Length: 369
Image (cartoon, rainbow, N blue to C red; front, side):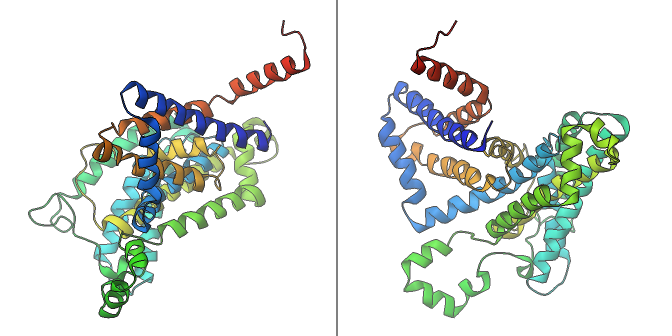
């Protein structure tokens, strides 16, 4: 399918997903137009809402990049959730235990989280390359191991805050919040007091994670498009036999691909801890960042650059849709239905191709038999 056609199909899929959501709202007794107005204002109604939308979108953009990268190299990285958790655990440990200067501390903590998650994902690559174990099965199992490892780490008094189900918070030097120290200074407070727009824009936990997501998308796109490594990884994904015939080490590239994908998801977990939560807590279930990243990747057509608008769309729908229940009493779950419908329609481009051919032939007056 041509790129222009893919873009049109994606836009049409988004439209159809919103139509499905509108139908569900109408059947439930709510005005779809009013509901979407509430959702729209919940995203763009104030600078604070825009900031929160970006903050909510950032981790799923990065995990979306991770999943897209793996897809491009012929692998299904369903383990992004576990890699996200591992990245957050080790970023928290580095952010709390290491004593480093500002900026450097945050960068080191992100790299530690990325390295840990890369090694974690590398296990999946080794199991697939050495023993032929499907990466879907092994990565799903590792997701659960990562979740319970998170809870196990919080049994250590060195990491767990007394009388709490959470860890100690990372040191201020490790935080990656935008103008974090300045906002709490006297000069910052005085300046923001007189500037309502900036006060609302910077009041949420705005951090450098979104800039990191943009840089990662560009970097991954460049690696896949313009480097020898990217060529080898894609060649293995497209046709292993042809790649091996061309002298490419198949097993090595499978492991490398999984490690890179895992490191990217680990960065998502690290930025979330260092820029938003500043701690990790006991988990009863998956947080969903990795699984939502898969939806973002599908909406983006597995294009690393397209994960940015796709992630913002996903984050905007979930954040703005969260206001439906409190403002008009409509179930916010309808947004999940709309998102699921969008992914459903995006995943079936052949259906749109078929309808397009039928429409074209009818227009030309050709016989459809």
